Image (tube, rainbow, N blue to C red; front, side, top):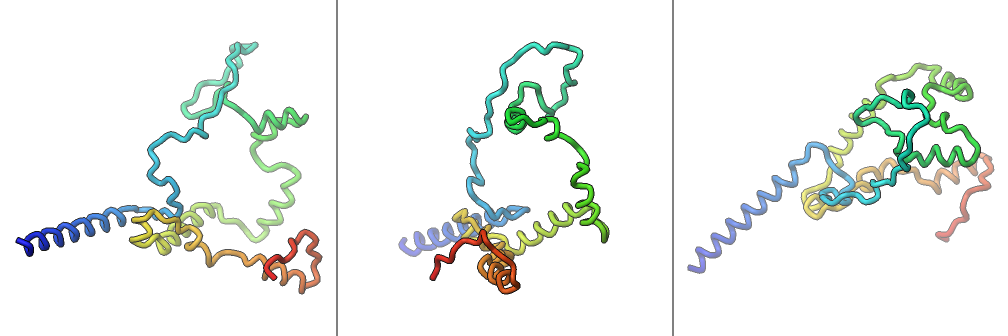
Amino acid sequence: MGRTVMRVNGLTISALTMLMALAACSDDEPRLMNIDAHRSTPDEFAILPTKPLQLPPDLAALPTPTPGGTNITDPTPDADVVAALGGNPAQLSAVGVSPSDAGLLAYSGRFGRDGAIRQTLAAEDLEWRRANAPRFLEKLAKTNVYYRAYQSMWLDQRAELLRWQRAGAQTPSAPPRTDK
């Protein structure tokens, strides 16, 4: 009787371990930030109050409704701040390159540009995240492994500061050293 119970418990533990291993390996795209990854509650900060409803002066000037588009009662906090400070809120939605940035854009693209750079970077990052994906126990415990995965890409601020200072550059905004 004791051996049968022991064998059943051993089989149960083995089956549960295999089930958890399969569940942990099921992600196609690795998630490095596991904060609230399986959250089922609504995000209360995503709900914004709308502007009050009012009848526009010209009904013919109303925009055509588009699914997923904007509404005239949608909050526009950035545009409201720009208008309150005396700026032109229409500049926030301007498309194209401003004349003040045209020279910078021309100089930065003098050796050519890759039009698909965003897709290339997204594919390379996905490859990097797969190579640095959370291990079994990290997935099981929903541990945040983002910092470990990208740690080799961090800039050593202190070493960079010293490099610039040795080169003779003035660094007036550098914080004082506190780890002495």
